[in-house]
Length: 203
Length: 203
Image (cartoon, rainbow over all chains, first blue to last red; front, side, top):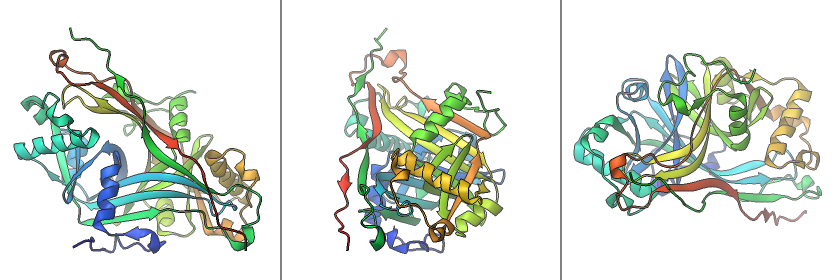
């Protein structure tokens, strides 16, 4: 099946033409974005924390300090919401009102599971390193037992999921087309700069 | 006063050296980031929505469709959490465990107020346009009354606020310094591409 089934929470009501439940669309956004924002409830109020994420199949992974408050709240508390956003451009219209943003975002609702199997956990760490720098997981010093225990890995099922995107030029009203101002899109993307080698010398 | 007062929620417990309550640090992150992630509670569960934000003095502004569910939930519901994150680089260490991310983030807790004064609302719209493209608010066709009514502007007080940042090279363990792998930082930043003019012709 190529699409996630909409639920009352993931059925987009506002601007539904911007919505998608297509798996390929969702996967591509999750795989490109370096960060997610994890929302969970603490003392009745939401807390939104940025963290790196990665995807394996139909699960979204995050990691954190083992036995942290956040880990406990995600495993034992109310359902969480994980949102991933990429900004693709400023949309500059001829009217103030029609200014917009080109973006791609994914929202995941659900409860995560704690990854407890050692081999699965190790594979998950490798997958995170591979997301950042393909081939690197085989080159670095692998995690030892203390490090494995210090870090918790949580996996959210990609089940209640939706994507929302905007692309393309501004959509001005017909009567504004002659307003003498530049209109169009300023593309934005996350760009990698020149790598900075660590100068710290071995002792 | 140059710093926000920590509260139990904004006193950083984990890695406190990465935390800051300095107003200048907080303002700079809020002003540079194009997007925030707004967390609020809907039916007992958190919802995290990305949207553009802007700052005027000691308030953080967002806008949305007037009378939308989100507007009602933010004004009438539990406190919200607005998180702003900038990713500055991948930190590639010699050990898998010490890989990290250079980032700057701000977390704001609180309840927003609805901006109802027409002049203040108009100034807020202008400030958003100015954030995207300085000088542009005077050039575009300004919002008319229908458009002003169609959009709600909400302002969060910058009161319960904290910043968290990481910068600099990887911090490997001494015994890993001779692992034969490149180590350092791959800088990341949001880059603007060549503007794409809207080709739509006036009718």
